[in-house]
Image 1: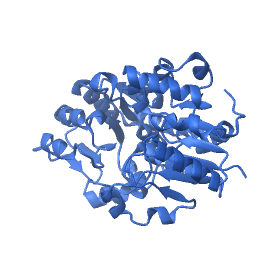
Image 2 (image 1 turned 120 degrees about the horizontal axis):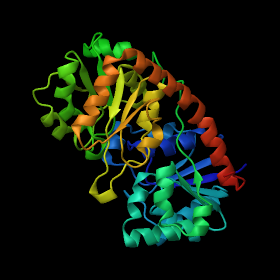
Image 3 (image 1 turned 90 degrees about the horizontal axis):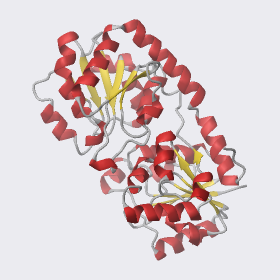
Length: 378
């Protein structure tokens, strides 16, 4: 059986979009075909789920380091693991910087995933050169969508660009679906039948929850009984709570377990996350799986025009893309959707149909299998 060594810093119990993506890829590979080599989890993450590694259906080798870097020690250990586990391929959870190990792990076939953060490397001369080296030594660099493909191709050589392949996360439409438990969330939070705008995301400045809060008085002027439900946690949470002070209709859930997220999407009538690009392009949205999960749940979405986020929305069909740096565009899009329930329902239905067809895990896994075996299509 073909066996793959996944080398990654981004893996649960640490929370995050890349972590979830890489974990799902590992879980959905055939039994016995995956070994994971990852950095040590943060103390808080490990304390929250101390038995995570033991529950997984594949072996996980944890390094003592909090961040894996392509140092001689890490390279030696990766090679030993690959040899002991009879691996014939390597999947890097994020191309930068671990893809720099590729030359030392030949002749194994090697695939490097990219996300939003690699696009930031393209604007820094030293980092851009490192990306070029990675592209020239791995067999395939993947990209999430057209935006990330264009940005990455600035740094990659023509030969590496020709071997780029799209590989985006799938959406589990059995988990993320209408009637996934939203009524229970509404009852628990005392929301009743009020119109709810929900945002499910890690709380960091790029995601745009502050834009939603600044837009909220304008929304309330047209839809007085609306509620803004902010789901999640993160380093920006305390700042957001301060911005929302005095707005009783802005609710914070705090941390929510992954298994409870579908119900929180389902508690909303509209999903909104007006993300924006920051730090001169260094901090950018790679795709925005939350928009696709919301669409699968049957919600119309309001997305920010950052990076690859528009790739997760069919403009005017499944939702709207707005300038996330200003409150006005987000407010206007939200008001239109809350006041025209029929149109919002049509967008939600169209979104679920699109996600079910184009963003399935079966399609993603078929592509990944081809990449790891060297028989992939374009």
